Image (tube, rainbow, N blue to C red; front, side, top):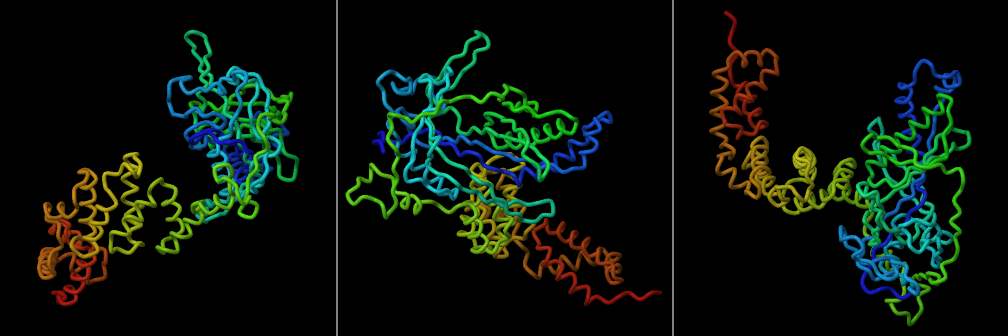
Length: 512
C-alpha cells in the first residue's frame, strides 16, 4: 500500500450494479396499469394480445458516492465545497509530467467500512487499473479505478417497506462490487460565450447515480436496457426509473423496440431524453495502473507483528468501530421502548428525530408509548407543515419534556397541553411552565370542577334527559360545554367521569 497523504482525502468510490429486480417488478406492474391508460384504440394487434401479460423490470444502479474527507484520493489537495474553480489543484490533479499518485488512507478506510456495512467480502488484495477515455475534464486521458479486482465484492442490502396492504415486507438488493475511483473534473458550459471551461477541483457533487433499466415478461430473457446517466438525488432517481419502466412498456406494447442507448433525466419535465446510442461498445483499454502497487489489507490474524498502524488498514478494527446499522437500531428502539415497529421506521427516517425522541425520554416521567405520539403526531406535524428540519425546531427536546411532565403530573389537561405547545412553537424558547401560569391553564380542583359540571347539567336539561334515555352522543355535548366553561383547562376524561356520576345521582323526571 502506498504511503498515505497528510490529512484526509475526498474522492469517489463506486458501488456497482445494485439489482432491484423485486422492487422494480412491483413498480412495473403499477406502472403498467398507468401506462395502459395512455394507449389509444389504434394500437397494433400484437399490443392488444400482450397487454394483459405482466411485465417485470430489472434495475441496476451504479452509484458514485463521494467520501467525506479533507483531501483527494491520490493527491494532498484540499477539498472544499463551492471553492473557486481550479483553486484546489495539485500538479498531479493537472496531470503534469512526472507526478505520481499517493493513495489516501482515509479513503481506503471509508471504502472498507462501506463494504462491511453492506455485507460485502473485503478483498485483502485489490488492484488499481487505468480506464482510458478522452474528454476535456480528464487531462491525463485515463482515470484510475478498480475494474479487475476491487476492494469489496458480493454484498447485499436488506430493507423493509410497507406494501399496499399496510404490511411490512422485507426486500434485499445485491451488490456486485465497491471500488475506489478517481474523480474526473467538471465541465462548465458557458452558453453566452459558446465556451466550455474545465474545473479540476473535482468533487463538486456528492452523489451521482447511473440507472440501467430493462423490462421483460417473467420467464423470458431480459430485455434491452437503457442507461439513465448522472442522476443526483434519490427523488429524481425514483422518478426517472418509474418513467423509464413505463416508457419501455409503452414502446413494446405498441409494437416498437427499446434501443440500447444512454438517456438523461429532465427533472422539469419528469421525462428521460435520448443522449447517445450504445450499440458500439466503447473500448476503455483497461490496463494495470503501473504507479500503484496492489492494495493490501489485513485482519487481526494476518497483521504483521511490527507493522506501523499508519501504513496498514486493519479490517477487524474497522468492523469494531462500525456503528449500529438502521435495522439494528430499529430493533433496539422497539425492544427498549416497547413502541410499534412502524414508529421506529419514522424515528430513523427523519434526520435527527430519534435523537430528539431519546432526549425527551430521558427528561420526562411519561411512558415512551405516550411520548411517541407527541413526537410523531404533534412535533413532526409542525415540522412538516412549516417544511423545516428537526434541528430547526423552535421547541427543544427539553422544553417538550417539561410540557409532558406538566401533563403527566396532572397540572394541565391534554387539551391545555396542545394550546401550550402551539404557543411554544410560535414563541421560541418560552417555558411551558411560564405559559401555563400566564394563561391560567392549570387544572381545576376536583370540587370546583364538580360544581361547574353540575351547573352545566342544570342549564342543559334537554341533553340530560336524552342521555338518560340512552342517547350517549348527548354526553359529548355536555363535556364540550364544560370544556368551554373552564377555558379548556379541564381534563375531558375526568369531566366525563364526574358527569356520569352526577347523572346517576340525579332523579329522572316523570312524564305528566
